[in-house]
Amino acid sequence: MRAVQITAFGEPSVLSVAELPDPVPGPGQITIDVSHAAVGLIDVFMRQGLFGDRPGLPRPPFVPGLEVAGTVRELGEGVTGFAIGEPVVSMSATGAGGYASISVADTALVASTQRYGIDPAVAVAVVPNAAMAHVALTRVAHLAEGESVLVQGALGGFSAAFPGIARRLGAARVVGTVRRGKLAAAAVTKLPYDTIVDSADLSGALGEEKFDVIVDPVGGDVRTHSLALLKAGGRLIVAGNAGGDWSHQVDTNQLWLTGTTVAGFNAGAYLPAHPQVVRPALEAALAAVAAGLGETEIDVLPFAEAVTAHERMERREPVGRIVLVPGEDSGRARLSAA
Ligand SMILES: NC(=O)c1ccc[n+]([C@@H]2O[C@H](COP(=O)([O-])OP(=O)(O)OC[C@H]3O[C@@H](n4cnc5c(N)ncnc54)[C@H](OP(=O)(O)O)[C@@H]3O)[C@@H](O)[C@H]2O)c1
Image (cartoon, rainbow, N blue to C red; front, side, top):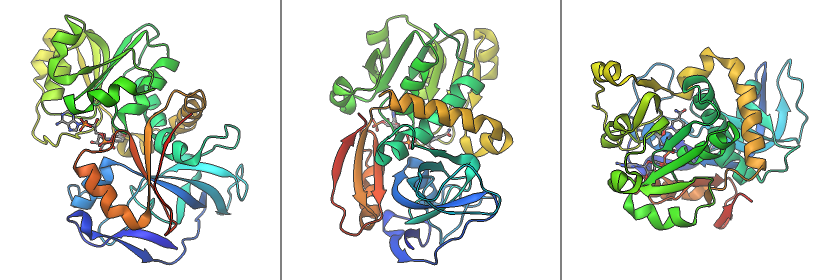
């Protein structure tokens, strides 16, 4: 198979296209002929070696990538419910293996897109993240109908999956924040936010408004501001650290005094312990995306431009997601989920 490998921890230039042996599915697994592989900030962190010594995470050489879309290639022992050639989207259990023309997936983490007719670029860009948003909002934040939600970094790959799911769960108001440089993109997004405001001027834009649930994959000062924007009884979902402040601290006595909750959510830790939540979350995500609630921007690049993709992630250029395709001569396209 053709794949993009990380040959050593380091700069984007450690990514290179290689021919590797075709994988075969184990029991309970399928292989997928990959048409699209999503690029996430977590891939950048893993390439940089930020989590290099954590048990269970891959070390070089490895193929990065957590999410793929394509068609079922081969069924492993005991697999039922999937047919060869069926269009699917998948999350990875291992944090690796996505940037490849053939990917192995546990069927528990795979959903068929056949019934929904979703474009595979859109499916891979939005469905896995929307499934995680569903888990985070239902199981971690316990979002109730009529509540309000604030999403930090509103147009980021992971954040963009939240407003559609929050709407489907009955949120009464969904507000996003972006940095000033993304305000123009925020003005034209089709994502179902009520409003998107400048994260540097929250009080100017929101006055005294506070929120029942805040989603924060950014961290640092944004996390500190998030804590101050929670209603009593509000829940902050700590869902990432895109801003790169690894020393941020929370004062637990303030949580007591303000009557607020901070909950961490990381799919890699949560899902293996609660596998029963994956299937309903994937179904909810597919339905939300099919209903047009995941209309994020998607840039499509060939595997050969994986270095460019990571450089663009590091420069914080994308407004939405970058998706890689295995073909050598695939051009560039800009799609939006419609
Ligand atoms: N919990 C989970 O299961 C899960 C799943 C997926 C991702 N994640 C995590 O979520 C985080 C984001 O991942 P992603 O793939 O969505 O990345 P992404 O597409 O690059 O989005 C990052 C977002 O964070 C914003 N941001 C970055 N630095 C910032 C700063 N200093 N101040 C304010 N905003 C800032 C960006 O805004 P600009 O565009 O203005 O730079 C962008 O909206 C990562 O930490 C990733 O590991 C977690």
